Image 1: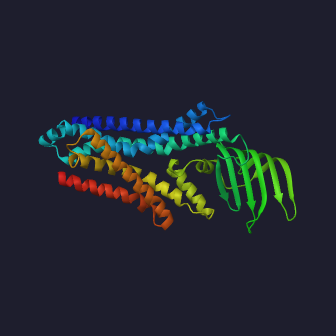
Image 2: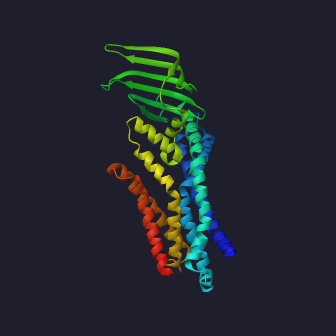
Image 3: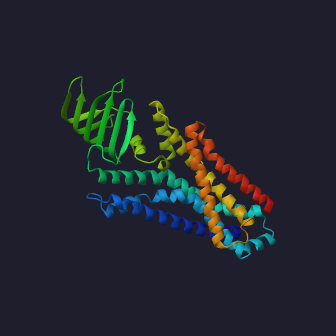
Length: 353
């Protein structure tokens, strides 16, 4: 049985990794083409290539579920086309035993996905976004690129957040309780202090009084704010690319600020339940090989896998925002497509067995 498991693992993993490399490679190429309109002085083609290169781990992580689905369809489909699955069944190997043999290498993909999502993708995405924002902003106030954040009555724009606690281009707008602008400032750089707060340098400040404005240049200013480098590293990255720990911490911070963390909680549950998504999609793939796709061509299996993967992704992408709009638990939005796949796959396997 060990030899059977290794044989199944070889076919499933080789097909899955091949599909993953093709899909992620095409997506990376399209991302590089998408950067071409932004090429300018300070952001050359080599910079765009470096930025896109740093986003490769995210692209691999994003396509692991679909690649597992299509890879299982192609790998097991090749065995079905050569009647090897039929021989296994004739030798007394049950469908459930074959499913277990397929799931073992898939667990390696799950471990790979978790490792990428928790440790590689967040750091790589932060470096990528900070690098691109710094190149494109040119250290100007309110550059097109960068991040916005609200802290109480302050609205903050940061051009780039550099790993280690350094900010570039910090623009702050402070409003009173009547929503009137009372102060605006721009700091060239900011450095986090271990004692708390940020040391801002070269601060250009404008105060809005009753009948006049007053401007001044401050060499240094201590900015006391609850934001830490770890929280700021969360802001510069899209929620889907954050670690679960970062998502949970920032959701808690938003709650303390009186803001809704729905988007970050949804991303948290998407990442937490991603292993179940992979296993459910693989279960559907195996059930299709023993059922409707047993004797079709490779092209038909490929098209079926793409359609199933896209439908699954669209279902999660639609239910996720719906949970934030209608206020139901984001866990439900993530679990419904997974449960549907698991039930459908189990039902088809039961018929085949």
